[in-house]
Amino acid sequence: MVGDVLRILTWDPQAIEAIRTLCATRFAAQCRTETFYSADGCAESLGVFASQANKGDALDLVLQRLGLRPEQAMAIGDNLNDLPMFALAGVSVALDNAPAQVKAKATAVAPSNDEEGVAWALQAFGL
Image 1 (spheres, rainbow, N blue to C red):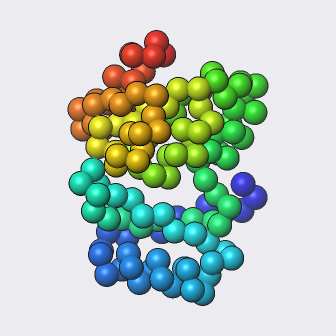
Image 2: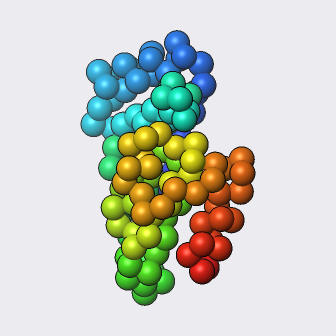
């Protein structure tokens, strides 16, 4: 984390494809894209991020600064971009609205984010 944070989000289906293609063909060294999917597998939005940024590295940095070990961390997520966090954290909780690939990598599946899934995870794992 050495520069300004930049995030571009779009929900328009045509814009998702156009921006994804532009990033892949002209700006691959500077950025990467992540498609965020709804629980039914449809593309919901697109994020554009710095090429090396991911949530696992961010969690690792926070843990180092707090003097904690990865097994002391719980990651809660609902999309593919949460998988690097899941791989690091001792406990990983997917919300029920997450795609199947995310649920498959989680320690547990909580109710959806609309059904207080984060609160459920915090209670279930004693935090």
